[in-house]
Length: 85
Image (cartoon, rainbow, N blue to C red):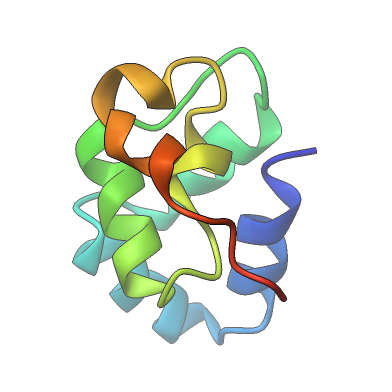
């Protein structure tokens, strides 16, 4: 499940930190939780997906946030080598 990483990331934060994180990403924690719950039926927009990747220092990637169309928005990512965890 692609949203598991985001769920795990958020669950490690305090409620106040979650609110700050969501704000940095241009959304609310309520909306983030909604998208997580509707996994596969609702996706973050490309701007929010990019901000999530940036604000998690790459722990939650754009590819995970938009598995169905990330290549359309970021074709350069398919040329990058995958990070080894």
